Length: 260
Image (cartoon, rainbow, N blue to C red; front, side):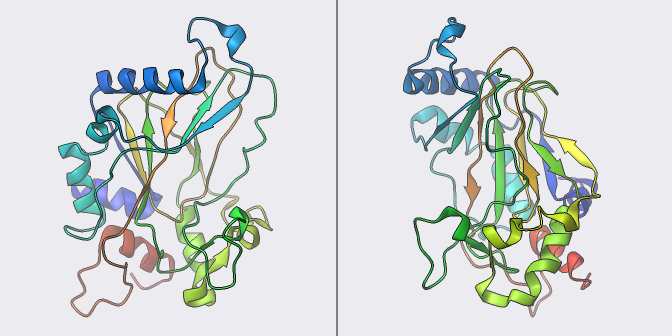
């Protein structure tokens, strides 16, 4: 991976990898997901909801797509060799259909990663993130279908991970819940440029855990399939390494805190 790619990730909070997995695998995965949904790709009358959410899958196409040499090399480069846990499949899958209806899930957010003692494990908005990104090394967006500007691409506030690092620092190890983080609609990142996660099937966006992003309504013609699995750390991230061997994920947090 080029130094410019690493620098872009640290600065903008994401890395786009074209052809991260074979285009043909995307088709195999879509076939499985169509069957699970019980909808017909040739019959638009079965496309009755703006979004359908599916859980994880570990069939061979999903495992193969998540463990390509290109992705493993990228995980090594961004998290560090030996510091990440291999993906055992893919999920979750928000499948978005062309619709004029409000999907109801298009707000800005980050993907939080853990519950603290005393938190309600059934309350998703009560899950937390902390400045050390406990429990998450990356968010991955796998494009399982071709996605253009009309096909509900994920919106990304480039550089917003730096703002979130600063917001999380005073909360220490306990961190901040998604409910608290979202209370101001992520105003600290409001002026960041918005990039769109577009590309051909087989493209993967590797995102910093603190990156502010959002869904949007689908104004195109064909359903959009993506997977959005977390990449888990094998060892905890650290912002105070004695040897100074910081990964780009850690460097980005340190940059946001003014330590780089």
